[in-house]
Length: 389
Image (cartoon, rainbow, N blue to C red; front, side, top):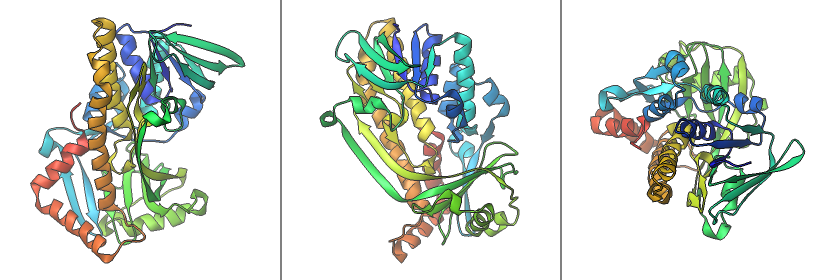
């Protein structure tokens, strides 16, 4: 086989890059190790920055998002019963959109199917080669046979555990990581959300988040030790703990129900540099992981896609390599800013096992400052709705 861009990874970043490139007449092939059903069953992010919303519209996959997504003008941060609303629209003129990653992925698959893009699922033993040559290659096993794709460029959209990042020699990579000593226990339930905007709650018992996927589907989280297992938590125990961490007037109106899905997500901050190695470009989780506290995971992948898409269009259009040469540096600037914001939000809202009383007071003072300073609220809002590409 031969194509212009081989994309490793059939999640939202790989699909979005392919969709955008295809609409510009650039050929792609997508390789994914999991089945499509598995990809579509993953419960992930649900908050889209406005830049990501506009990018999905540009890709021609915004119709269902615009019809079913929920635009949010703000969010709430709380410390016990102190609540501070961050007015995104009033402070920045922009919003965020609640629309689940699963739905984004389904929309992209439908669009790619309509275009006839080759998508191989269940691929194994992927090997990326000849990255320093004019034509590179990606070989893989599919349905028992060995296949090879000749391509001009390779986009590594295959996540933290994928082969793309590991293809860059270890001695040429710089990796930065912080692993947090807790996780988020999350449940999905067919219950109305407790509030029409997200509530990020700090309390003496730890962090909680009241989120949603729709007007009838809620997503809630509580901070738990990494030693906990999801099966150790009954639904009743989860709801009881959530109520104790949310502000009392919010807890009073919480509607509970059976969980549809329950899991624990560990929290880590991770960046691998550079994002380019010859004809290989890293995109999304293949290069960086952020704690979910700042709602940046899928959105950072979208900004990587934006930079790489424009760079490749320039390369295949005018022949200029300026965009692809600048891709790693441009994307990393935005990545590190988002890392800072996610780290800041994580420190603001979580209890750490070994912390002293000073740390708790600093969290309270920080939230009180947000409640009294429009400048502080604007800085948070600008980061939450998404920095410019």
